[in-house]
Image (cartoon, rainbow, N blue to C red; front, side):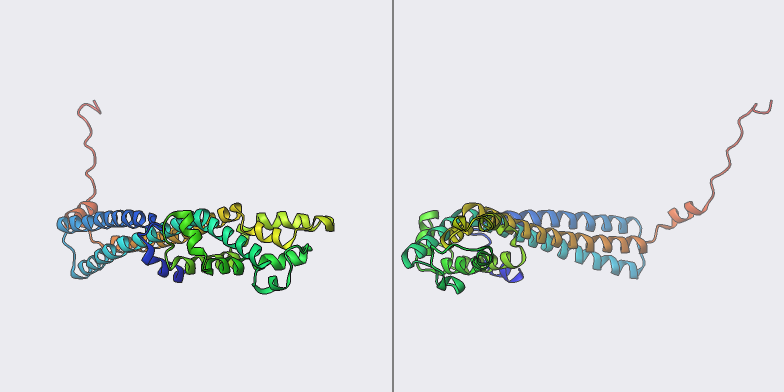
Length: 283
């Protein structure tokens, strides 16, 4: 996943991942605001109660880390969220259209896909349940092949009205393989519908072409986009929570080592005088 984010940095403010610009701006404002509040609180407290040298050094380190960690970490979390949101939306829209049209052209033009086991399967062959699972496992490969074709740029231009970013195809191939290997739930609904047919009578078994078209249907790409957004949202949340946790630990350490003023300490040690009984109470 880190490699995907690194390759997407160049697209952070493009039309594909424009939400990342919003995420970065919100992260910088939020992180900078939190850092300012913490640093301002420390400076005010030190002005009211001067501290020993060791505590002052610890306060300086805490202020430095707050100023660096909070804005940068929350901005990075905003970048991750924005890129995931943008790519997930693109997957549901123009990528879905592009892959379907490219796959359809490959299937109808060459009577099959030249990927793995599909090289040896006619499109009209009806699939048993075991054969169906073999075909489904090849889904990332033929999606990657569809994204690698020369015609993909033309389909993308037709779907979006703009050229396809050069690095987007590589990122999407990586994402589809990662989704299938680690988050296969985006294919489950389509696979279950095909399996229910494969478990019935042989005459109703899905063909190779039907299985291919089912795994590149709009519903599948909708689930894939939702899975991409969910994964990046979780990653962004973990990054933000880690930064907040580190900042909270620093604040706690500074709080435990901070020495109160001499007046406050003496006031805490002197007991309050006993109340004087009112006149006439014993009269």
